[in-house]
Image (cartoon, rainbow, N blue to C red):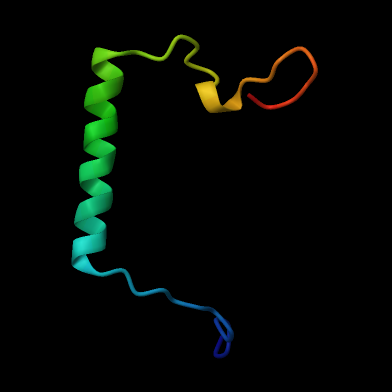
Length: 55
């Protein structure tokens, strides 16, 4: 059907931005292999204290 994608926004991502993102993902994977997270289900940023406030 024509007009199916009307209003869809396509964001341009430069090659350097894609490479930067790839390098960051690779570095995180290496870091996690050396220093595995204490709780693999939740990252440290997601933990909350007893009052329910995000730490």
